[in-house]
Length: 256
Image (tube, rainbow, N blue to C red; front, side, top):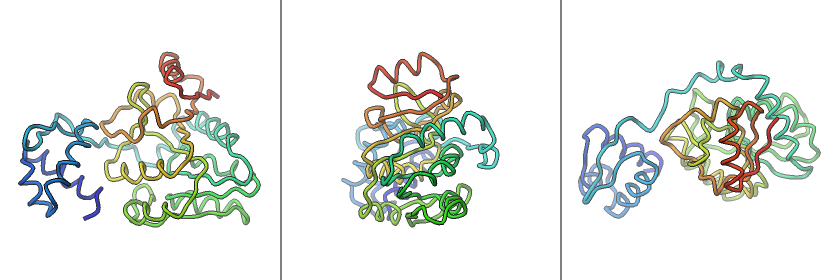
């Protein structure tokens, strides 16, 4: 069983039953006890459940949040997203390989990226790959394979992660669901989290694109800690105290 699917099922069992033993989870998922323990330890660190002796118990609330449909997100704070995308694209150097994940802000980078000479775009987003193909006959695009999450047109899972083993990425650009100055970059969908983390691990640098509204959105799914984030590109309406906290943690903040 793929690890992201296993953890999703594990969490479902814990939440539906309230508490489950390690042995029961191992039997339910047909995996070893040591594998279950590792999964529980990691999910406890991320706040998805609470680890107890011999098993785990559910915590209030769920790890996923209801995302606004992509069409609606694409027009929300559109001016800010366009400015953020333009500023982010200026961080791309000719001849580099960049990763773009799916998202309403990263999508706005496309018209700027196609003007950068000899850039290679790596993406798990069918929508972004299509947009680049329509905008340029010369920009090289490498699409990571995987299982498509239809609502987002993003590719996820083992095949996506496996393809990253053969790719060098200079900088990864991520549209964040949320950004917490104390916790890091937050995601909305548990099934996407592991793929996102594997993409981040493949990138030399991580740039997070987050308009001011992302500083008030919270979830229990952490994609990257502050220590992994190199740059946050935001707009001038981002909370001053949050920007100060990010800079104090060593993160470069670009406001536009």
